[in-house]
Length: 216
Image 1 (cartoon, rainbow, N blue to C red):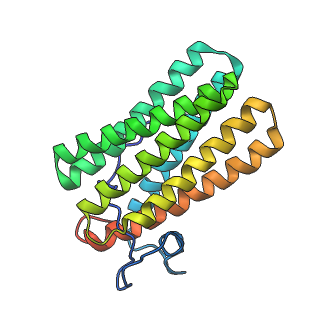
Image 2: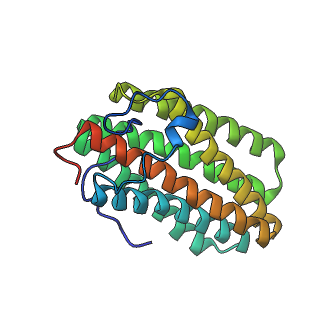
Image 3: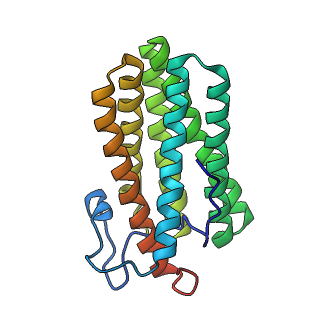
């Protein structure tokens, strides 16, 4: 993945499009805004690249673990962290450095859960897998509360729902990769990519509403 410099700061998760009422469910949060062109096309493109980058680097880590390639594992893990720092920097650009540091801490927790889940799938440790999923669920709750607190237009329960769905994609994908079920992994990967775009587009619409002077 090529390093992505966010054109405008992103990650002020709000879920209502301009002129739309506050959304209060995960289903509403993930719904497409409208058939119109996005209000902030550069922001949409940047957000999609950022979140697809997260999916790609974590997938690369799983593939490296499956292959037993330590060098590739390290390279992928470093790329995951670099991506998380980009997201944290985006938060800081809107809410200040303390918020950026907090976001990085929360993303580190997400990555710790994904890494633990991947390693447990490789070793077949069901107890560690269950613990990793519990940690990812708790982390999703923390991220949702943090972002909701930063933005009053953001329903925490809806954001948590999107993050829990994302964690489910991680779990399914790493399990299929470790089993060598390429057909199933391909389907899950497509679903994960689509979900990343849904999330990114929803966030972009929300940011454009909250920061219309900055979003382009």
